[in-house]
Image 1 (tube, rainbow, N blue to C red):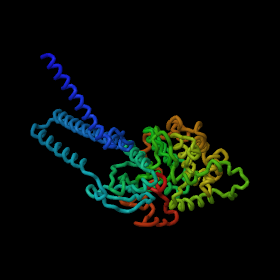
Image 2 (cartoon, one colour; image 1 turned 60 degrees about the vertical axis):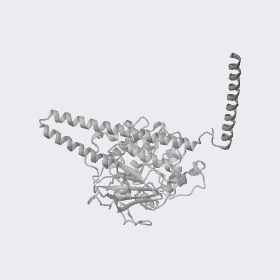
Image 3 (tube, rainbow, N blue to C red; image 1 turned 45 degrees about the horizontal axis):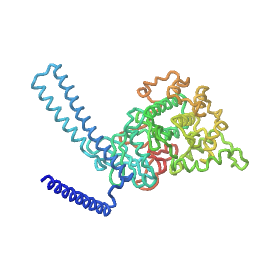
Image 4 (tube, rainbow, N blue to C red; image 1 turned 90 degrees about the vertical axis):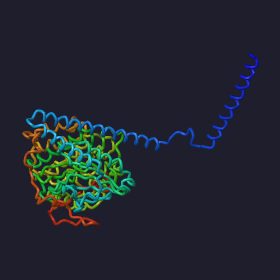
Length: 480
C-alpha cells in the first residue's frame, strides 16, 4: 500500500511538472507576441505620471486646507457669539447666514473663469505673443488688465518656462510694490492672466513728459523701485528686465514693478539668454568688446546733453515698435554670459536712476552693439554731464551701482542701498503711504490716456509729441 502511494505521488509530481512547463511556454509565447511586456516606461510617460501625482496631491491638499479654514472660521464666529450679548435665536440666524455665505463662496470657487466672464475693452499693449487690454468683469464690474498670450507662439519660441516663472512669481509674491495677479486661465489657443490695472502709465511716459526729475522726485521713485526689487529677491527671483517701461504708476502716482516675463528663480541650474530682446545685440559681443579701441570703430559726433536727450527720445519711440528692444539697462555680466545673480537687477536700478536725473541712460548710443560695448567697458564710459548738476551723493550711489559685481551695492541685500547717504531721512516703511512725487491725470477707472493708442489690428497709433508715449505693458516678442 505504501509503495502504491509512492508510485501515485511520483506520477502526480511528474504531471504537475509537465503542466508547469507547458504553462511557462504559453506565457513565454504570449510575451513574445507582446513587445511592450517588461519594457521600461519612457521619460515622457514618467513625467506625465509625476505631473498627475502632483496634481492629485495638490488638489486634495487644497481641499483639506479649505475644510480646515471653514472649521476655523465657524469656530471663531461661535466664540465671538458666545462672548457677545446675543440671544440664542439671533445666534442660530447668524450661523445660518454664515453657512449660506460659505456655500456661495464654495460655489464661486468651483466656477471656472473664462474669457466670456469679461467685457473686453481698449488694447493698451501688443507683442508677438498676444496683447494686453483693459477689461471689465461682467459680474462684479471690476476693471482689470488682461494679458492674453498665444500658446502656439510660446511653444514655438520655447518660452513656456518663462511664462510659468512669471505666473509663479505673481502668485507667490504678495507685495504692494508689484502688480497683482488675480487669476489665470486658458482655452485651446490662449493663456490669460488677469492682472491689476494701473492707469498712471509707466516711468518712461513720465520721463518723456518731464525730460528729467529733480533729486527729490527721483529719490521717491528709486526708493520704491528698491522696495519692489527687494520683494522679489526675498522670494529668490531675479527680474532681469528692470527698466522704466516696466515701472508702472497707479492712479495716485505710486510705482509698481511689472512684466516678469524674464524673471528667473535663483535656484535654477542655468540662466538662458534673454532671447530675442537681448540676443540680437549680444551676438558675437565678445569679439567686439574692444571695438572702441579699434581704428575702424564708427565715429560718433559729440552731442550736448539736450541733443542726446532729443535723440534718445526719438529712438525710444522707434524701439517701441521693434522686436530688438534696448540693452541700455542690462548688466555687463549678463551681456558677457559669465553667470550672474540678483546683483544684475541693482545695476539696472543704477542705469534708471542716471536716466531719471540726466535724461538718457548712461551708456546710450546710436547702435545697440555700441551700447553693449560701452556697458562692458563701463569704466571708460560712465560720465556725468556738467549740465545735469547732480549732487555728490547721487553720483556716488550711481557709481556704486554701475560697477563690478563684487563692489556693487546690494550684493549683501537691499539694506546696503537703503543705508546710502542719498536716501538719508527717507521713511522706508511709509513710502507707499505718503503722497507720490507725481500724480498722473486719471479721469476714471477706464481712463487709458497714459497709454499708447492701439488699433484692434496693426501697429499702435503714434502719439502726439510729448504726450507720453512709449509703453510696452506686454513682454514683447522675444523677451519671455
